[in-house]
Picture 1 (cartoon, rainbow, N blue to C red):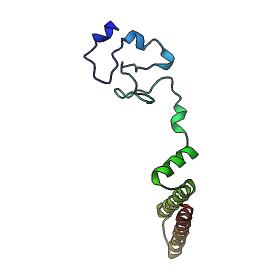
Picture 2: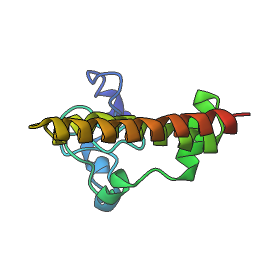
Picture 3: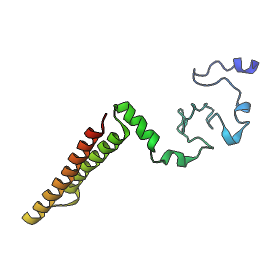
Picture 4: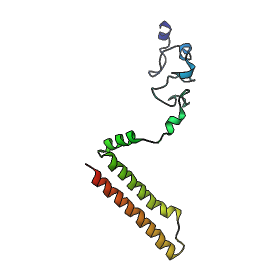
Length: 137
């Protein structure tokens, strides 16, 4: 520990440990290749941006589950079924907006068809929002 005192010039977030101890466990290293210590549960180094070795990268691509939806509902102050209905309503509103992006009206009949699709998407959004209101406690 005496050699750690000699490294007082490091910034406050860097651990004063010698580099020989930092590379002792290569499969689960606590320091980056640049010498900076990783923040707990971080995927990347905050100093150089390198990815943390030994972590499963598929973990970052997981689809949120019921636990994440429940915690989001708690933060918003609504129940999980009401949150699902709200997200479905938002998806329907995005669908109504996407109709105009993907389809263009060349004739009056095309314009009428596009308006009908928008009406259907917006009716679905209204139904989802109404279900969310009814499922809220």
